[in-house]
Amino acid sequence: MEKYDILRDIAERTGGDIYLGVVGPVRTGKSTFIKRFMELLVLPNIQEFHERERAQDELPQSGAGRTIMTTEPKFIPSEAVEISVREGIDMRVRLVDCVGYAVPGALGFEEEDGPRMVHTPWFDEEIPFQEAAEIGTRKVIADHSTIGIVIVTDGSITEIPRESYLEAEERVIFELKELNKPFIIVLNSVHPYDPETLALAETLGERYNVSVIPVNAYSMDHDDVMRVLHQSLYEFPVTEVNINLPLWIEELDATHWLRSQCEENIKNTVQNVRRLRDIDWSLQELNKPEIIDSVILSHMDLGTGVASIEITLQDGLFHRILEEVTGTPIEGDHTLLKLLREYSHANKEWNKVAYAVEEVRNTGYGVVTPRLDEMTLEEPELIKQGGRFGVKLKASAPSFHLIRANISTEITPLIGTEKQCEELVRYILEEFEDDPQRIWNTNIFGKSLHELVQEGIQSKLYRMPENAQLKLQETLQRIANEGGGGLICIIL
Image (cartoon, rainbow, N blue to C red; front, side, top):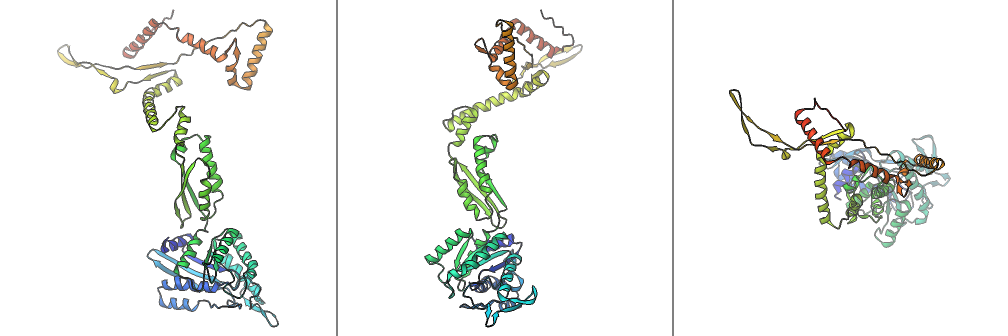
């Protein structure tokens, strides 16, 4: 990622105020890190000469050995300075240094006659230096930083062994976690790229679930600073995760097994995504089900915390679902094309009568209006009326009339005695009460009730003779063309 993009994204996430709270145990290189950070990133971008000189004078002191160099929390520079790293990227930067939590072996907390006492802004009376250091460190963590930089060490930069730092290290990290403040760990080492240092960084990352960057704070360069800032971006919270499935999934019913499985997988994964660094984990989790072919991070805006993920399903799954939905075997794209053509034709034919069917359901009568291509225009005919002449243009077209006729049928099984009939009635009523649909499967004389009713209705439907059908058709034509005001129907 280009360095300007990193700075722009950080400025966007922090509202333009980049306040780096540099915390950790004492004697880990916090002041050294701040000094190099200022020299590499901040000072070169301060345009005003006197302001740059003042910031230079405020850089913290640093030194080797066991003796504590920082004696109080310090804002560096004392006021946030606005820097312009490129046109369109302006930000206010301030780093916060602190004493840090005490570690065994560090010098400076004690004097010959007891604990070193200091004045602080928080109390009227003097308090022990160690207590003041802890209060100041907590305030830096909680009140004065938008990003936390925890400086730890492998013990190579001082005469204090690694084991002495562990308790203070855990304490500051857990306090940052309780505040839900984005932070990273910088592992300060004289040999940051040795296998032992890299292994320690990996162990710390797994233990605290946070990014760990090994550097030599004394000699770090501009790339190291950018790497620290880049990793800090991934500790900011995710604001939105957009997961894009194939659009045809949305056309499935909400209860369909494929849609349910996809949505359940997404729900179980996304609910555990908190920070941007969790996105990589989510990609692996989303890719676990067998139905998934690939999961790709299509876009991630580090400045806003919005991530977009594309999910591709296995090949052949689309055809498989089409077979389920249509009930038609689909051997390949050629079958699909044939099926679409058939469905397209059927859909066009249905659209012709759909409105009429809806009307006949609602009112009992529906008409399919003829289309233009169904109309027949006869040859023009010259006519004379009195002394005037005219032209008769005659057109005809077929119209379809749908009439709802309620057909009733009766089934009267003769099964024997009155008691037997009562038992049959009771049995049918019980079936109807428990499950109304099951009554159709009731067996009567070797046939289901549904079959008996169907046979009775069909026998009546086909009972109308052909001559009656023709007369009914002729009657409809005359009513439509001539009007039905004088219609008299006699059914014998």
